[in-house]
Amino acid sequence: MLSGVKCTVSNCKFWKSGEHCDASEIEVNVDGGGKAARQSEQTNCRTFYQK
Ligand code: SF4
Image (cartoon, rainbow, N blue to C red; front, top):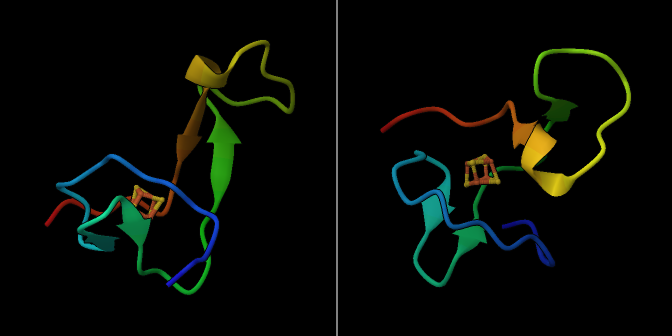
């Protein structure tokens, strides 16, 4: 489990109850590509895998 990561995406195969992520590592990118986001809504977890 990744301590310190809070995730609410409950249909991800790595998600565990209590809003935890059970992946060994995650990748987070900017929506639409690029290297700069202006707000949190423009970022996303690329490790997500639908269960
Ligand atoms: S891999 Fe990403 S989307 Fe899936 S539980 Fe972890 S943080 Fe959430």
